[in-house]
Length: 154
Image (spheres, rainbow, N blue to C red):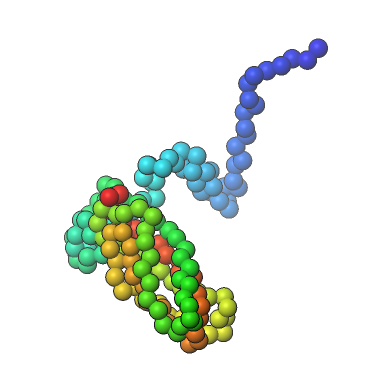
């Protein structure tokens, strides 16, 4: 005779070796399991220094404790025709920030492995940022990897 049960078997936690990884993996998996779309993770910056509570790109020495904010990350492929050695492009954010965010970006193009590419962020707004890139060779595209930290959702 077979006994049927509707209970799910308990999953065993995989414990990390304390000498090598003290509680880091378990804490991280616990954070991921409890994360919801509108929740601020515990890794959110506790303090921020600048000249404006709302516009994070403003320099200054005031200390702030950001109550709300979020991070956006993306990859943008700038395609140009004809091929160019220098170009400027506006990259939109998926969601508008309530103030000016801080943006970090870098560019790369695998089809130009021995050449050089430089880039610089020209301007940052609540809904997009503008970046300029330049290369030693005429390119038809470049990938731009970016990360933006900013105040609450607009």
